[in-house]
Image 1 (cartoon, rainbow, N blue to C red):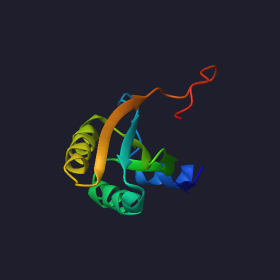
Image 2 (image 1 turned 30 degrees about the vertical axis):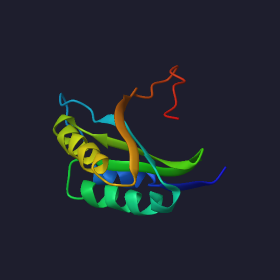
Image 3 (image 1 turned 60 degrees about the vertical axis):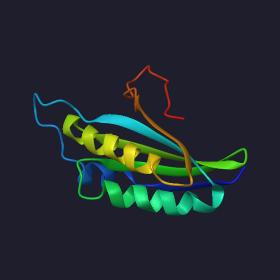
Image 4 (image 1 turned 120 degrees about the horizontal axis):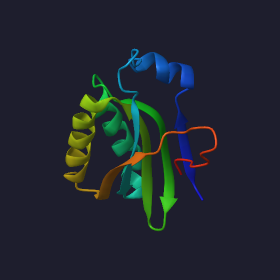
Length: 120
């Protein structure tokens, strides 16, 4: 299985994302899943990064993996509530791209001790 992984170190992700102040809601994590033709996967990944630049959304991890005859781009993101609008817009714009076959986003449960849920 062909798999490309682009990982932002946790300390970099935290530096890019505004920290929740005392009493403010903590950033939530979301996963964006995009099915795309294999020859377009890198281009769609780069487009997603550009579309999320200058938003309240931090891309924690970007993974491209083979999914049958297509490739799946998985973006693990983090943002506070206002950043969800940028994620919604990302999904809308990627869905309009010719070579994108499917795009969706979903919330990812927070990691807590005793919670073995992983994002993949």
